[in-house]
Length: 112
Length: 115
Image (cartoon, rainbow over all chains, first blue to last red; front, side):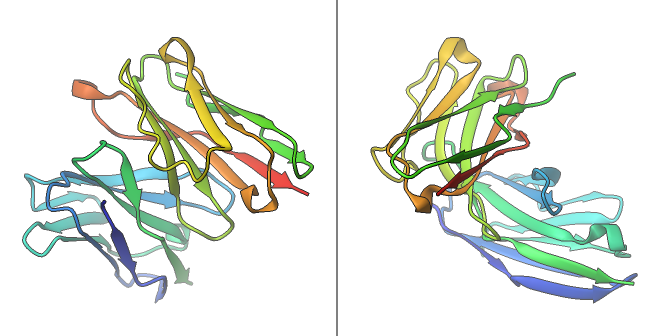
């Protein structure tokens, strides 16, 4: 079955700097890759997603890139702000079963 | 409109008791997922319902766990003979499914504590 790895597990950046989180997946048939932000004690919320027919997608300060050949995708946050501090999860939807497999998460801390 | 709701928000039970957790998905969403999240950990897939298809139960950790979805809407996750390792937050998510898209919308979760 699908396996998703996520790095780093923790990330601290200064306010205004950029943050990059990387995920790799194992199933070459996976076709949908969402990213979720989970603030402490709250539910995960979708922040951006990308499909396998697109290489990059951007939404204001957030972007996601996908390399299908290498089977990895990355979340890029520019001009980080303290409110970006949260745990970020990547996920992959494999072709088999159509369920989602989540990465273990990255705890991002933006230091003022 | 209303988002995904779950009840109860918190459940404390004694080891060996059965518990039922409820999920009300967004109206019209055909896909419904259950996940388990232990403290400080990621989301562990449990079960997935899509329309009238047979559910994908591949993530259920043991036969003490079961789930049903009545009328394609409300879902109940049942844990029998609870164990302390079942303590976690149980999250439900729904998505439009099919041509409607696959963005998952999560509920607030049920925090289960097994004493």
